[in-house]
Length: 141
Image (cartoon, one colour):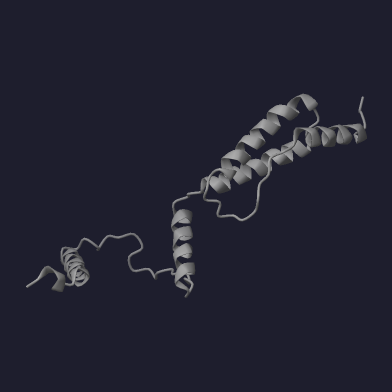
């Protein structure tokens, strides 16, 4: 019999089924967590591509995994909020450097799954905005 006539997939499936049956006979599945309780099955999408994404997201969620892209975008948002509340021009440059470093990291990642562009901050524009905001702020004293 030639090797190309063998259905490897069917052989592997039969071997897996046989090992599962042996484990069941030995009682290896008797003490599993949730035994006897109904399965909670999420509704997976019918489309194959959407289903693969659904499974990937589900696995990441179950393992508390957050992609770097999402972490960096959240950090950028937090730092930009801090920039919007900044009250001291001396803190502007270091804060902008942190933001722009994260933007550069994000934009060179090469796997941006989120189709929202992230742009670097312009020091001149940000300095002008800060000075205008500080000029409007009443001085308490």
